Image (cartoon, rainbow, N blue to C red; front, top):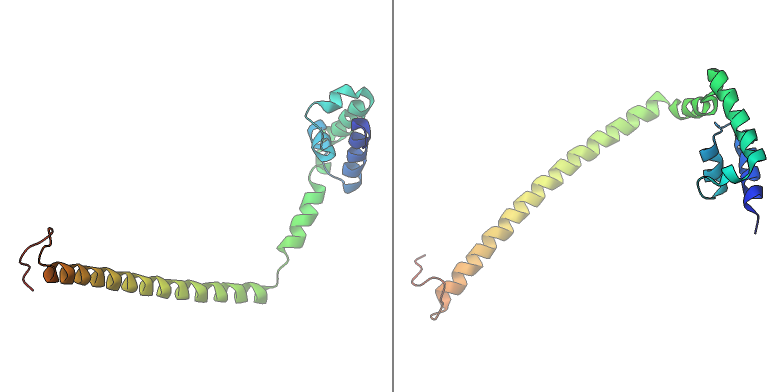
Length: 135
């Protein structure tokens, strides 16, 4: 099993390689160690804080990787987008139709339940619920 220092160092190098924003919390989270573990390793803490200072002094470095990832997600063809909108609209209409059918079926079940109740009370002579029900 790797020591905490090794885990922290590997996490720091990985974050640098990926170009992500560096902070003590990010390094500890990436390493999978408890919060505050970096404080026990002074050399690594100084390296992390120095790298963090680079981001604080040059705000153009912050979020560069995230911006590239967002641009890649945004590029969707208009045809594909319109196709998905049409499909979504069709599914909404179908859903509304099913809701209407479900409501009608629920009403029928309720009506049949009442009719069954009336039939049972009418046919049972010793019913305690309702006597002499007239249909």
